[in-house]
Image (tube, rainbow, N blue to C red; front, side, top):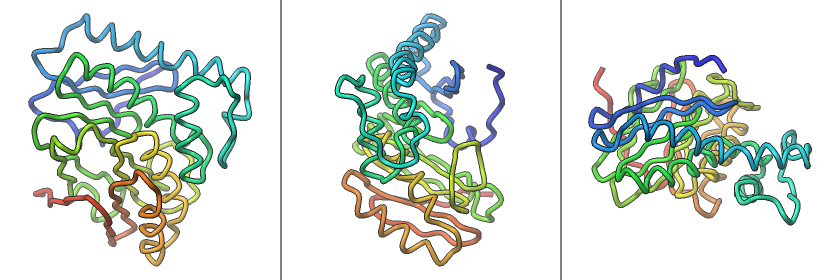
Amino acid sequence: MEYKERTYRQDHRQDDLIHFQLAVGETDLDIGVRKDRFSTELVAWVEETIRDCRRPLEDYIQRDPGFLSALTPYPVLPDAPLLVQIMAEAGCLAGVGPMAAVAGAVSEWVGKLIAKRSRDVIVENGGDIFLRTSRIRRVGIFAGDSPLSNRVAIEIRPDETPLGICTSSGKVGHSLSFGQADAVVILSRSVALADAVATACGNLVQTTDDLEHTLEFASGIKGVRGAVVIKDDRLAVWGSVKLLPINA
């Protein structure tokens, strides 16, 4: 597939890591690893890892095409592969279809394998991030045309990782959303769950009046550690989230 630069990726890239991009089918990853762990061999191995991750999912969709199009929780076949089960469970908890968790699930699957070779790793997939770190890091929030876009960052401590940091928007990106949020960011140890809940929360936001209800919804889902919702010039936050200003 043709690679298209995603400008928001600058918001999570780290100076002490080497970042590289890999695109396999619909999966488009930006990956950061420790400089001493980077090599052309690692890149080739990660690309094959992505293919190995995608293959069971693609095969399953051929057997059960309803899985691909479902917009509500979807029961999977008893012999469904693990990645499919993870996506289905995340969708069920969030009240959305399993494909709402696909980017986060792939990020986590690939990230955990890379983490066996690099103590610090970031895998970003369409705004959905798997992060493991040995130092404090800051992840900027891109919120499209909102005046708050690129104005705040989430601080992540090593003891909070591995962690999923997933973003949904009704105005930015190609992912399906029925809402009008500029950005919804969800934190969870499960990247698949963070992805699914970000989608569900994004669907709830039509106006700034919906921010409080959206946070209440996110806070009621077991496994969600924190949430940030941005709509126009309003920002709402709940849970274990430390926000810091980004100097203009």
